[in-house]
Image 1: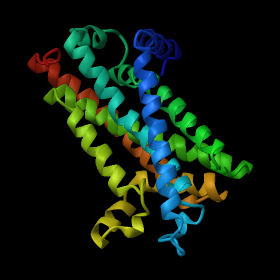
Image 2: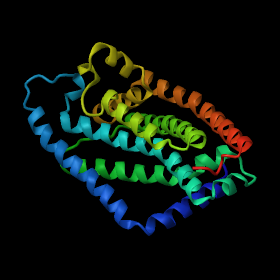
Image 3: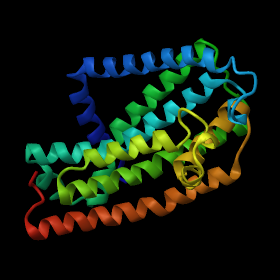
Image 4: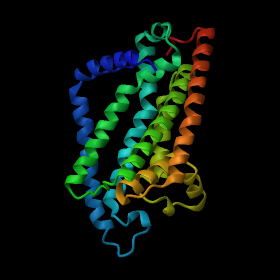
Length: 267
């Protein structure tokens, strides 16, 4: 990917975001309110003598903080590309953007970089504030490397899914609902707010097959317990290596189909 093109998209989106400063502040405030609620609920949950899962050994609050931070990053990956494609469609600039000499794959990936960076900043802020009220993070080098690898894998996996939703938007014009549904299902099945062991049998099997669950488990293990879960890390990175080229190919196919029937700029 061309760094100058990515930088151009980031500058554009940063310029737009600066004119809506209140939006970022409100999103951050909402995340902090959620953190406060989880902290208070954790006081009640942690009074139970025996945790419902080994994942809760460090307490309910650390468990949910990590899950919520990962879900926020995932949500950005799912929504950023679709949001940008929808904006380009409604402002009539999509055909112009895709008419440049750059590949549609490069254009779609570059369009979501700013929102992905913003989500990483907000998730980091969430964790930092949680550390001020008692969250303890493992500082071992191995755990830090595992955290970076797991986070990179999750970002790529859900950027891939976001590109797939953007391809859906190119063809069917409305993809935000699909992205919202996926995010809601991941929050339910991915072990964000409670251990997946508490799910009914069939849902527990489905949750165990999701790369999101692998990534969340790997990040919790490295951040909270200082462990490296190699199987989950390899699974997430493998899923990213498979999904990213597949999603980009499908996006190019969607753009080509929309060009042929003349609906590329329709919304």
